[in-house]
Image (cartoon, rainbow over all chains, first blue to last red):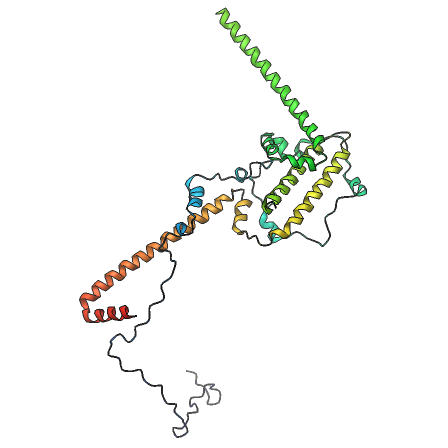
Length: 207
Length: 131
């Protein structure tokens, strides 16, 4: 067994004890008055809490209607059901197409002190396009998925917004052209239906 | 003065609509469409500027970060509210259950102690009544 040398032993085995003659004793505090009670360790009760979990907190804060609204009936799960007027399908996870809101917090956009200003005619030269359609795969999502949502969106547009927008009439022309096409399509459908009806009538007459 | 949320919503709607129309123009670009395109690009920038101007009015608005996870996953953010309420109710019920059980335990303990230590318990009750 290893033994420590007298010098190497770090711990002082004989601490400096004060002589009894030098020690000055502080008078101990007065002992508590002798209690006749046996409950000498009894502590005071904590003050009663005003609001605890034993009460119905939803009712206390008037959130019953909110509970009934969200938990009473089934809430539709998809994001598009919350934003029905938004064109396109937006139920894909944000991380897949880089549109996640968390991403905005994690990598905040660079915001300079420069003010946002409309582009000058010289700058707009960079946006010159050749007439004609673009390949199918690059077309906007809303065109591929159909115009049901888009029509809903038009209903929500306030009348005064078109007043501010000088291009609104021109855009309406675009829309009208498309509607006309649809009308034309509807006409064709009607014709087909009429033909079917006539065929049925002929068959009935023959029979 | 219109509600600040309404103003922002209008601006966002306007922006989305402008971008959508830009998409339509660009997808089948008409021969004389350059002016319309230029105006659309600038109106998009103007709307962006208006959205930027709304920023200061929303400094005091607090949004729980968890709701972003729902939106990023393509879920309805109302599900977050629903989950929060359900969680609150569940915890409320849990705590109520605990307090009820403790109350029953206290009652039982007191009755048992009264039978075994009747003097001490009567003294204890007396002290508690005084305090």
